Image 1 (cartoon, rainbow, N blue to C red):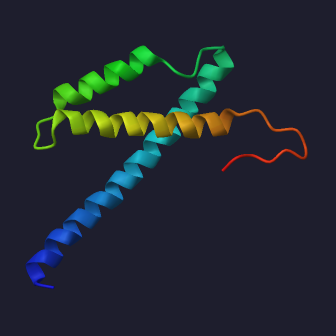
Image 2 (image 1 turned 180 degrees about the horizontal axis):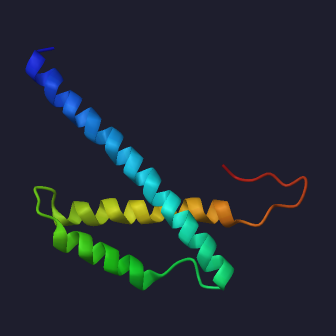
Length: 101
C-alpha cells in the first residue's frame, strides 16, 4: 500500500478510536443521568430533548456530511443510548426465565 494511503488510513483509524471513546463516554453520562432521573421519579426518555439534540446537531453541522446523514447518525446514537439504559434499568427477571440477547 502506498505510504500516503497508509497515513490517511491511520488518521481515520485514530478518529474512529476517538469516536468510540466519546460514544462510550456519552453513554456513561446518559446512564448516570438515567439513575438520577429514576431516583427522582422522572421519565427516562424525553422526546422533546431528543428532538432538540437532533435539531442542534443538524444546525451546527458544517458539512460535508449531509444534514440527513447527521440526523440518521444521531438517531442511532440516541436509540442505542435508550437500549443500553433499558437493559441497565430493567427489573431482574424471575428465576428460570432467559433474557433475550
